[in-house]
Amino acid sequence: MSDTIILGILLEKYNNAKYKKVGNCIKLRYQYHDVNVNLYFDGYDKNYPSTSIILAMDKSYYITSFNVDNFDEKNQYLDKIPDPILNLIKDENNKLTSFYNEMRKRIKEDNFQNISYSSDIVFNNTIQYNKNKENGNPFFHYIRAVVMTPEHFKKLFHSMNISKEILMKIQQAGFTIVTTNDPNKRKNFYEKLKSKEIFIEVLQ
Image (cartoon, rainbow, N blue to C red):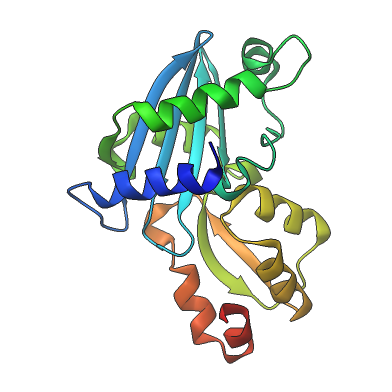
């Protein structure tokens, strides 16, 4: 199953949800090898939808934003994931192929909950636990006039639904992208690009 199909499924389920405000999302929850998997998706910015996953087991929690467009190209590397969680979800060859194949299957077949980020205990507790950690900022906040570092470029490509081409143009223009873990502070990335004349060609 290609990621275009996966993204289409997520967008369809989100668009069918009753509430679609800035702080709302759809959530998928299931268990994989004793690890609780929580996937959050919203199309607040329909051009650049937001996806994040939280993995939890006992007192270990892990959150990362997620680029669905890369889902078929490669299974995303989970940076700084706690060993107790990684040891349960990895295959014998130390890869995450089975973990991601199960996620694709669940996205296609399972029902999602319609929730708000602010009322979700798992999301809020994990955000608090991961305070000030880079991989805990799944939402676009603003564009800053600072050159994007190669490390930040790589992180954004793997964690946000933004293409390499757009990231390169933003980087070459001398800007970077700032993210946040607060859904109420998020901004519409597409609208922010449109508001800056220097990025008009990025959108074409």
